[in-house]
Length: 273
Image 1 (cartoon, rainbow, N blue to C red):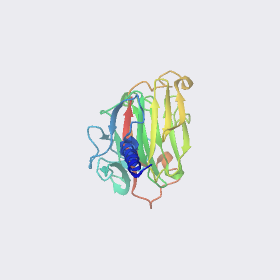
Image 2: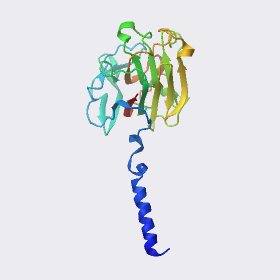
Image 3: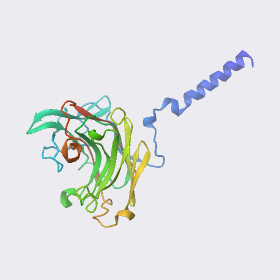
């Protein structure tokens, strides 16, 4: 092959490579779910406070049913967007009778969903006493209460068991108060140092739990039962992002007072249907 032909071949190969979508499009922006529609998302691309059209705050220091130690605030110190990421920061400070502060963001009264894929890309806080979660509650909780309204824990993590995350559902019949909750723990490498994708895929008949697109647990209506007390997952649910401190579960090994502040960093939250 003469020099001119070789040069032509190399130019063509270069141009084809430049046209490859894998070269020019970041993996995080490619649709991983062909055939499904993105119906809601927050990419956290605007610095400042979380988008008030998408998120509200639950505020208070009443223990939240689990003897937790933090006071949840609506301050930027505890929830803000920086460099395209949502930071939920738990801090050690005296505030309204509590010794810790944090934030609990909710889509309640702003967005709810019945079925679909709900996912969050997040890096978790580190240290004994931290208790971050990405989870959902039934929209009707204000009228029927917990646990009849149902709870879906997409991801829970406790700092004293760093290499493990949990996916769980709670219902009137199956819940942690009765020690009958349905869930599974799965080991993850570098859960506090790297981002991982936590997701559920929820249909009328079952809920599948995923980490980094690997399914690790399925809970089925046919196994739990069809009554409202057994399967309340046929109604709208809202989403919650929070970092608790201590509590009945997160504080089982105490709270390390040397680690604060600690953050859950969220790259994005997306809902597909």
